[in-house]
Image (tube, rainbow, N blue to C red; front, side, top):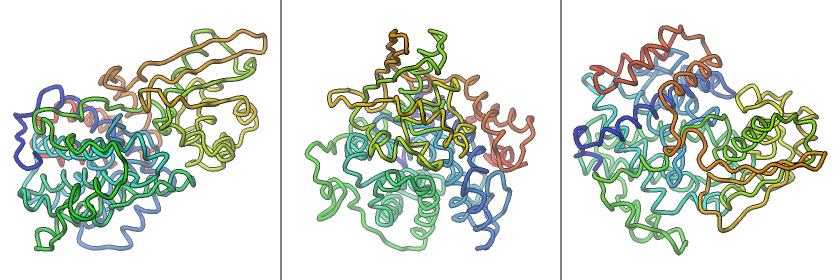
Length: 452
């Protein structure tokens, strides 16, 4: 599927989704370029030095392709606002930064059709690998193997762009699997920055795996069911679904089913809470100072955003706040949204928000069918009135999709946080190129829009 799928084989609706997902990830990458550790990592890869093969986005440095992938990867995930698939986890943040980093070593211009096809087949690998392992159901409670499928997604896309054949693609993916086989979940539960920096290592590994495969370095092929330790044998869950790896492969695109682009800069598991809180506050014209309590019922998978309670009701840093459902709920009720300004330390430590957080209660429903969507929110006021709301699908889900206008607004909003200001003309040009990516003769045109 990765090597043989032609652009013409891919349905138009899947191509359109891919173009929107790519623009969405480029938007959050711009904001991520100036966020937390991203500038320091961009400076670090320059210090490491090497042949100037690729561009560090926004910052404009020229460095070796693996180093560009390392720097660009953290930017894509930095604000935790990239897309998430309901069974495939994070998707586009994994492969697009690495793909942009190999444009200069491809040997010939890569056009938009080639880029889109490589994006789609790699994303399909990542989604199916996660779905086969039933990863979204378990990864927040079992913790292992975390987001192991992301490096496979990135490697498959880079292998396609750089022209590896079927055998070489398996080898490169096996190399990435060997390096990143177990990405444990304490990076989230401890509120660390590795939730974002893991993308640096994944992009770097994807590029290196493909280049080392070209040199003849061999790697294991038994990623999924190899004896003794393919991932589907190694993980002792009783409901893995290996058939999802191949059912309808190349004809049925799981990527296009259940992909969500985020309207809020926080963990996807918080978005249903936020959306329903906002709906109640706006529909009823409420003042947050009149709230007695907020009661929520969510999925088992979302527990990572409200357990352990001692940490989730007392965030002290940006990563902790991003993954705190009580904080995002209280913030949404107070501010009418949730964006990067709400992740300033002074906002996180604000006593009014903490007072409202203490009146937030969250329980899980083991029978709730969707890990991310349809959580129940009930707001009770001091005068005894109460209001309930369920948002079936948050804006951005494939069943409630963002349009080009929504994505354009998101791009400009994110660009305000970039490490360096980008002219509006470049941002508007970027939107046009993404909308008609299949007509772009050389993806360097897109790359040129991503630096001042």
